[in-house]
Length: 272
Image 1: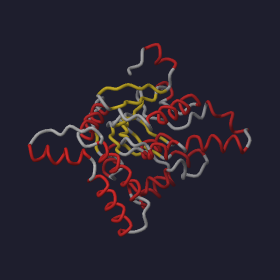
Image 2: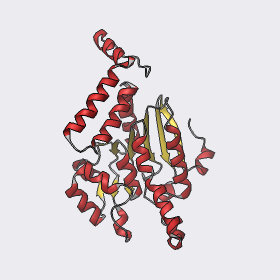
Image 3: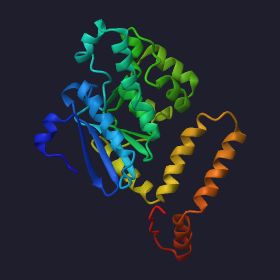
Image 4: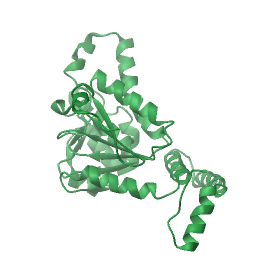
């Protein structure tokens, strides 16, 4: 699925398959640090929509081309919207924010390979991914408060405290300050830091490890993990786990995994 050089110039979201079962999605506006233009928003929505029923895709890696992950909304392009109607502004707001539940709802785990600045909406994309791996040059900030808006936007005020804790989230949202990869790693915002230039390779390595597990098991792990962030009690969480485990125990892939373990061989999963 690799894109040709001519396509790169016109397409703001590039897709390829660097490994069987792994879809690499690259935001392609490097001259603007992959800031969200109208075209990029539309093409990213389309790419995520297409993945929902793509059973050949097991893992998604999201990254940016050039030296940035995503600098948030392209304020230069969208400056004209300042004089738009409340209805048009609300539509754009919802259009951007809808990317967050869309990433969460994908059946495939999403690995954010954060290769550079992830600000505003770019931070939201990283937080809405299931795993975050950073390059040493990665930087993160909730920039909304620094442009006269609420620091709470695009799901960041829900996601961030669940990853780093409420105390740290308050400080980051109220100041809008940039944090580097080392601090992001220290506070648990990212899983790990990969060497410069190797963040996508590190994400693919993690993707390969995920694909080694059964498709149904992986899908249910992602679904239950996200649901556990919203359940109200340990008992409710246990109920959810119990029912999911019994359901997956009836899959043929579970039997194959047990047989492969006993035979000391690699399992062959068929998503059945």
